[in-house]
Image (cartoon, rainbow, N blue to C red):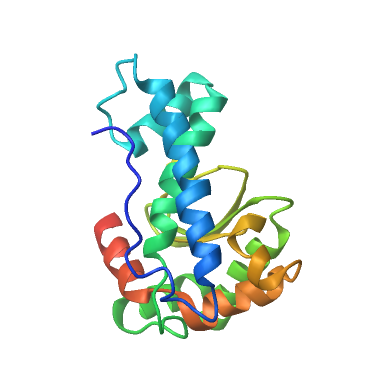
Length: 199
């Protein structure tokens, strides 16, 4: 199986004006592709060459192989991130997902506040996550290529806060990008499906 570069699940201009075609083209075709290329090169002569991306990043983490972990995790993180967005997304989820969020955070507004804070306080480059920890939903932030799977959690939503995810469209205004992500981009159907599989 190895590590692959999946196509975007929508057209490059589908998320405009919140995320531009230029941003998605550079982000997917240059940044994401580079992580895949480097990781693939690093495993081609190893017994991991046929493993899936999640297995590779976990093996690299366990072995303390930072170079492989960073590139495999960034490959996984980006592939997951693309699916967390859609045109006309965002707002408030419904059904079982909303009920679980309200149970675990007290309200959807409290979840949004925690998720926004995670994105704002990831110093430098990183990710904000909503994950299933085995009994409840939790919000985390990771720095660099970090992924909650290394702590035994199952991600159900992520937001990329590396500058290459938003700088063309928002410059240094990360809060505006986060607001656009939550208000207009989150693919709650994907999150709901991923959570159901995680339980």
